[in-house]
Structures are given as C-alpha cells and as structure tokens.
Image (cartoon, rainbow, N blue to C red):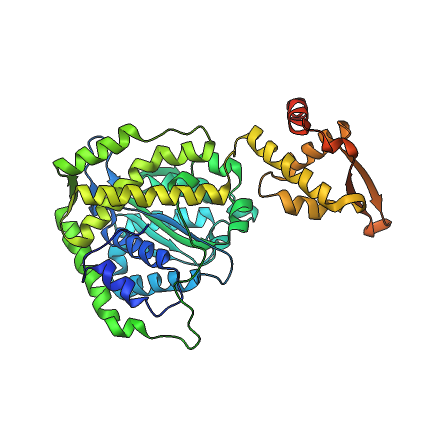
Length: 416
C-alpha cells in the first residue's frame, strides 16, 4: 500500500521522475521517504513524551535478482544525496564494505571534527554491509546500537583513550535477494532485534518494462527534485518537533490499543518497534505535505503501509523463527525432499540447500541425527576418496503421521 501524496510535493516529484525507469513503484516511494528522513537528521523528531522518535530509516529492498531494479532505485537515492552537496550537514555517505571497527572510528572522527556522528550507509548489495567474513560479524549488533541515536563511549582498540560518538544519527538503505536474506539474517539475528528495526520492502515486479531506456528525470528536472527535498528538510528542521493534533492522536491511540499481539519471535520483535515505524512514516508524510503535524490521515495511511510491510516480511522470513518452529519447518522440508527423491536418495549438500531457509547448519545436523535414530532415513556414502558423497534416503517409516512430533520430542536432548 502506497499512501497518496499532494501533487507537486517532494514525494510526488520524485516518483514522477522514476516513471520511465524499471524500478518497482514501492521502491520509489520508500526511497523518497528514506531521503526525507536522511535530510532531516537529528534536528527533527516526533515529540512523543519520554520516547521521541527520530527519522532515521533502516530500509532493505528485497526481490529476486534482476526483477525489480533494486540497484537502480538505490543509485537514484545516492544521486539525490550527492546533489544536496553539503556533506558536513547530511553526514558521511558510506557505500564500500566497512568493518564495524572502521565505522566506529569514522564516526568518532566526525564527532571530533563536526560535533555529530551522522552517516548514511547506502549500498545496492547487502552483502557489502552484512558480509559473512569474520571481521563483519559485529555489524548487525553495531547497527542495532546506532539505531537508537544514543551517545556512545567505547574503548579504542588501537591506543589508550575512548572513542566518543555524539549526536548519533545513522540511516541504512540496501538491497538483497530473499534467499540471501534468509540465510544471512539468521534466526539469532532476527531475535536479537536488528530485523525489527528494518523496513523490508518486498516487490515482485517492476512497474514497467523498458527496452530502450528512459530520461524521465529530465522531464521533472533533477535540480527541482533536489531543491524540493532541500526545502522540505530545511522547513522541517525549523519546526524541529512534530506532534500529533487531537484527531491524529486519537487515531494513533485507537490503533495502538487494539492492534493484535503475536507470539512468533520475528512478529513480536517487529511489533515492539511497530509504533515507532508508524510515527516515523506519518512524520515524513507530514513533512512532505508541509503540515508538520500528525493528522488523522497520516496515521491511517502509515498504519496500513506498515501493516503491509510486516505482512511481506513475515512471508520473507516465514513464521516460526523460534527453535521448535524452525525445527518443525525443517522436518517438513526434509521429509518432502526425501519423499520426492525416492529410492535414489538425495545428496547431503542438495538437501541442506533446499531447507536452509528454515534451519541453520547445526540444526540441520541435529535433525538428521534424530531422524536417523528414529528410523526415518538411511544414510550411506557413494564414491571414494575426495569424491565421496553422503546420500540420504527415506524409509517407509517416514510416511507415518507422527513424524514431526516424534522428532521434536527427541531433539531437546541432542541440543543439550
């Protein structure tokens, strides 16, 4: 769901400029929202008592490779930020692979030189930001910590003294395929809180197919777009604190008090931040239309949009990221693949690749051991030497209706 916006507003101009590009319309909208937040920085907050909301977005565009032009959408955002020019005002722009320690030092240096630890992390490949290399392992935790815009003091690993981060404001815009996401952002990271801070914008198709390229930016005027963004940001910074009017507050309170609660780890984690996401989006819409207060329409549109985001993220990660639910999904996946493979069986690596969306390597190992003990699978090897391969084959017992309950009942002792 994309909220309606006034004609001639920044979001309207930005989306019109993307009409002759193959990007997904949903990406265009959220790219514009991201730009508003990045332009406002720490100078603009939703003035909720005791719990203000900054407009720093963590956004991930998700789709299969080549389908929705994720990289094109992100390059347009980079172009706009670069067009604003005033790097000291809008923060560092980080696009290359940056280890957590290097990012911490860069923010400390900016704090010393400028007085704030402000940066915009933008990359068309999420692997650049959350790579699997050991030295990148701390990035999800660091981004989680930076998200709340709190001042930080931490030891300097190279020499005596501390690294200080003052007036923190970090934004994140990147892209990934669903298959990389569900393996890179594993259940532990989801439950650790990083994913609850992220808006996963999932699109299945581009807005149109264009064989010979387009020049729509010139139709609107790139200078006009950047000028519109700059004006919206400057006006918002002059206001500083955005509050809700009576009807807007009543609408938000009604939504907050009646929204359902979930027990699934990802859903409940996201819902712990869902009210912040709603207020953040409503504030960006209010900045875009120049009202600078949260009105009933802003809240209604934001609730619908964030609900859609949550629903698509659930489809992306799947319900049940808790241990028992993951194993349950893993058992079902292994069972289906073994039955499909028939008497020939299935190779170890192929079987794991087919179910790794649900369970990690350690969980897969435990699951196979338990299913073998229960007599549901046979394990044998073919080949010799370095070409030896492990093959799994289903037994007739796997047709039993109580496979899942039997395996889950035996998994806990193995985990301990």
